[in-house]
Amino acid sequence: MLRHVVLFTWTEDTSPQTREATLAALRRLPEEVGGMTAFAVGPDAGLVDGNADTALVADFPDVEAFRAYAGDARHLAVIAEHVKPHLASRSAVQYEV
Image: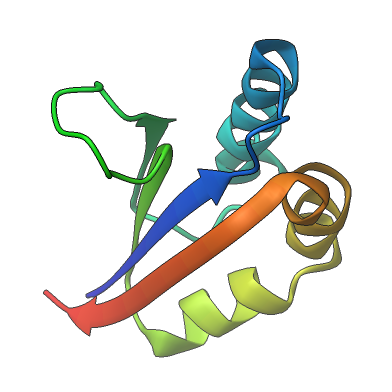
């Protein structure tokens, strides 16, 4: 199994409404794209200064399923429309579980 972890930090001018709309778009990915065996996304709890704003964790049965998800047009549209316009920084990792 492959785990995909992404940390997003939004620009300072990203409104709470935009952050919620982005979370909603990301939360639709399991239904719209699929391929994952587990999926979670949510805002940082605000317990430690300097954390990213949002975390996404998705598990895939294998590398091929991850690559299909990563290249899916619906996934790429969410990134282009909801993520990139408000992104200050992004960090990701994929690892075997």
